[in-house]
Image (tube, rainbow, N blue to C red):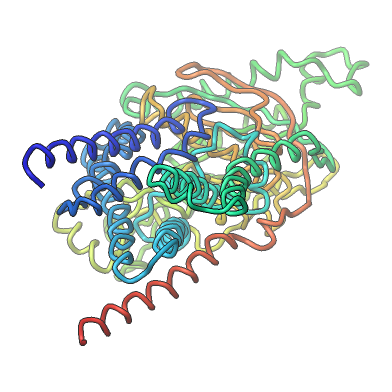
Length: 559
């Protein structure tokens, strides 16, 4: 190409790459725009075809730029919590996407026709599943299926496929539209017979439209299962996470939270069975349900002696006034070991012994009975030191900058105990755990009849981050078909039904309480019973094609 032609080609490539990155970003930033993901990859695929036809060198610069722009536009808010972590997340996540796209380009040297595109789809979904299941450093925020988190009327069939079914739909729709567009623009479509033309058009329409129709049918015919109801009262205390330890004591925070609960319970009408009771306080004592406070609300609980915590004693004193209430709250907890050797590689030295820390959830009642669960899907850097045998020694030399939260090895449910001694198991996903679809099925497989999410999204400020996180809870409600009570330190707290609808929500940066009911259910969806079949099949197909590609390239090199 001469310079003029080269500059024109480069301009077209940049235009298509930027267009693709913008179309990819909009579903995460603008409500009800998930459908744009179905066309967002067409410009990028077109750019790749133009680059191939014009023998453009180093095309990786273009597709890597596309993924960097997309990651930056949608997850820039991570920088409010950690600038370095944000830059790393954008560049590293984009690099992995770019490697997959590079493998697709490599596969075109051996595969022909539609096979390289199938290879790209299977490789991408296999990578998304790896992020969700096996990766030590995991950031599945931009899984393609998450694009529909605010478009729940279009993806009710996630109860069968899970979120990666949405990723499959995104790839299938983009490939269908791209293939039809190329065949028309390059003239091959006009040489096809009538049957081929109609087949291509109808096939594309089915791929794009059928999931919409199937979801609409499920939406309008879905009936929520209810074996009973549990009252919930959610408190959003709205503390600035960057100032809470400096601006007020833990006891002051406890007083604010308990005052929220007390005020809300006082304002509630007395139960019907208490109408004959003359004293208002006695009538209020009959309120029955689950009080919910956010993640890491307190940091003064030592697992060696839970009852010694001032916060624990305050909560127990409060529950004496409401003996029919259970109380769910998050805590940064610590366990001390008075021994010479470290109990684990993640333990830190403390005095003459060691300490391990956890991000925990407690549910307790006025008797002091409690269930305990430790968060196991941890945020890299702030909570998790990945590959500890490698990075813990390095971190020790740097002064111990990385988090060393120890998670629970196996999912467990917690128990809400009604006044008639009926035990109702429920799941409690702590913050980041709610982003992992197949992980959350573990709660239901263990018997959870409803779900709770406790989180602290205030670290990100008033950005799209907390909204995206809240939207992902709707996907879990659909996949599990469980009601969810979600409590954040600040917006968005809310109650979500089994169709993924928020029935009530709190406002950003306001101290609020929300009351309502969640249904209990026992039915297990196809996705819960069988897991992520889309991800497993895609991984298997990718490994087969990748093995064949490697063998073919090696044979070609020898010849």
